[in-house]
Image 1 (cartoon, rainbow, N blue to C red):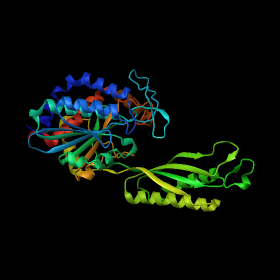
Image 2: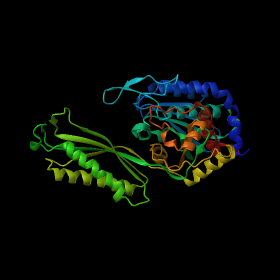
Image 3: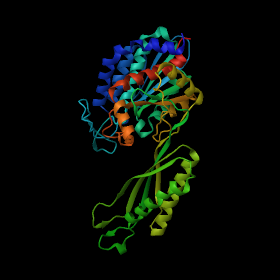
Image 4: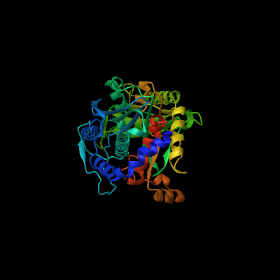
Length: 421
């Protein structure tokens, strides 16, 4: 039996899982948890894997869960899903919408929502795990189901690695993962080479001299200084990065002052950069430091600015060989038109920290989550960019065929290695 034939056998029971999987998805969506707080989610995942017959390892890197299913001699494949949600107040109006609030790392109460589709990722991987467990005659080898915390902070994958992941699992032959995106549900998008950008956040503290709002001549106004830095930063990508190279530099936060008639003594800027190459990343970071330092000197700041780089994400650079193997399996299984190249994505992920640490090839693909009719209408009207995207309070992947396609994609991809030939 060819690998795709194995996948078809494994997926022959998919229809019987539909009600269970949709109920599971809605439960995860109603009960989102912030990064490093995925206690309930991890508990449900561990319980489900145990019921399927997996060897379960909970609590890896805090709330991470790994399940192992050995099924004779053969390759080892790692499938990964992330579990954390975002501090977003849901506005979808769904009957299973989240009304959850939680305390964040700063000690503040915040609404929580699965606004990035991680509930889809958990549900599809659990569906794939169950199908592999129920159809063992169709495949051989070892399946690793890895459920990762804290992707939204960029440290969840490294946390699992640092907690000794390599010593708990056999070294996989390949690592595979996927993400639901704003493309028509029912489509999948493999892409060789760089797929998701590397990312870094930068916090800059700029120093001035405080004064009364009526006496600006006695101050060194950090609000003006911060404004000048922001304006100058807009020219970095436009005038310093070579045309044709990809780079994004966004100032996402400016914090200065507490009252209209008080000139504060400092300001804080928070920036985010996205790149596909380390030299361009280093160029952006150097430009940020150069501009903030020069503007501070021009303003007569009492001391130089301080810089903190945090929430760094690696480049997701898909193996050409692994991607070709997955893409071929997709083409054999899915109908014509379902396979689309979504192209490079400017979003970022920390998944690649796991295969990189393990020294194994990987590939990561996209799965459509938008109602196909809605997407087609938006495409015809030229308004696709207006559709609710990941991290939006309106982001809500259509249940079907998102779940069935995402589950099938994991099974088909893994079967490209595990299927009985």
